[in-house]
Length: 274
Ligand SMILES: [Fe+2]
Figure 1: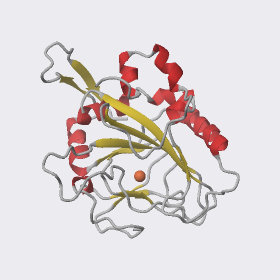
Figure 2: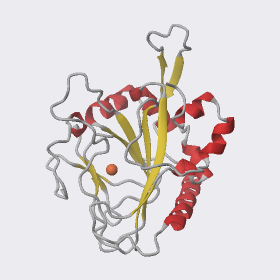
Figure 3: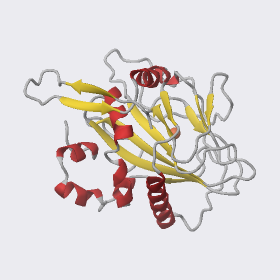
Figure 4: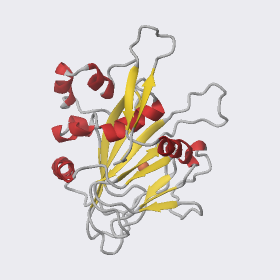
């Protein structure tokens, strides 16, 4: 967790009667500048041991309920592992991350005060070598040539690691500054090291903020691979349409939450604030 915070007050332009919004940003101005220009920000410790325990249990429960009987998730595909989507709809334990100040305040500092969030997970398994992903980035919506009034899709992921990120479980690699490109030179099925890549190994409970246009990949698990459970907490302006996650479950848990939710929670769930 960042040891220092600062206050940022936002006024919405053109809306003289809209209340000002104050955000206590859990970062230093220098860290925010690094996130904006390098496209990432490392946090060695985001979660308390108790929260880490609760989130591990919740991930395990959802993963078990969705694990396909006919797959052991060991294929060496471009995106190996088990993926879970729409987690706020699948387990109440994840609601702890819905208005989680150490992450949402940083998202508001760089995206503006009204953000929505969603939560996914990727799991790779013990004893299975070479589970990895190709180089990729998340907002694959930028056309070439770049139209002059194109709305560039700024959004943010916080990759939160529920297990130690090591050479055995598979570190994460990223290319600083690559979010400022449009990604056109990133080829298909690219597993190769990049000359300017940064490789991160983190303790369980740590994580990294990445801009969603940043090139990154989950590197291969080792011969003695250990369990690697990662949450991806995604933030975008509440008026930006979500892509890539498929349709939410029909009777997701957040329907009940919305019956009594305050304005901020409704905004974070993507149904208000625009
Ligand atoms: Fe990714």
